[in-house]
Image 1: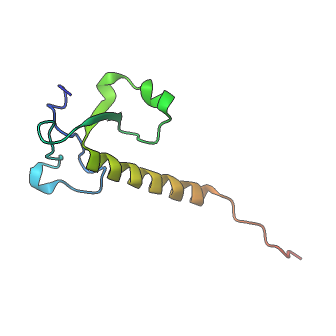
Image 2: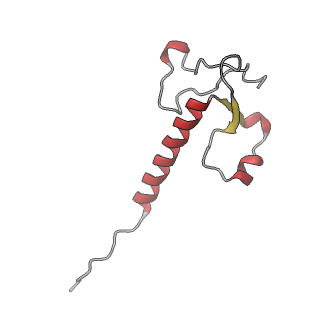
Length: 92
């Protein structure tokens, strides 16, 4: 938490521009329970545990939840676009 100055490090991954607070979430450890996680919230638990400490971010619960939802949605869309078109049922 020290490198983050005990403040959520979200700078828009949650969908908010955090425009009123220099483009970074205003929530601090003094008013919210912060958690530490990598920027890529879709990593497996084993891969997340292997991320070097200096690459971890402090997240408030609201930003973490919203960023995770956005990353999941983007991943679903990426996978949908990568899927091949289903073959026509009655090709002649």
